[in-house]
Length: 112
Image 1 (spheres, rainbow, N blue to C red):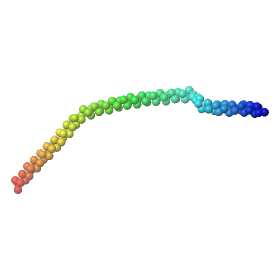
Image 2: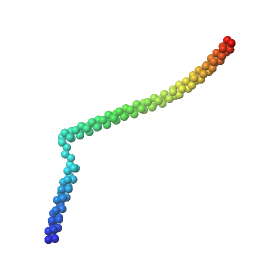
Image 3: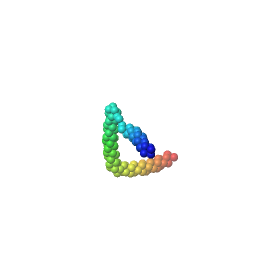
Image 4: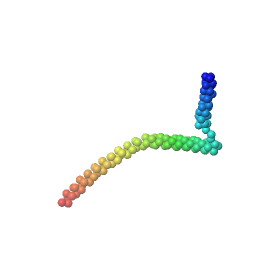
């Protein structure tokens, strides 16, 4: 009787294991219809095109940035020169204003 009890245990064990294997195998196997696969393929193609376009735009933006940096480097000495010229002109204007004020004060003193 001990053998028959063990045999019944051995025989009954594989069935739940088989059922659990069948249940585990179902989620792993994905059944895609032709329409689903086509839709997925279309989405992948669009994603690839989007990445390509973004890379091209990024490369173009980097080129523009590089050109702008070069142009800025070329313009920096000119900007410094123009700033110095503006300072010089402001100083000259102040000097002329002082001279005009002195002349006006001398004219005022003559009229009295």
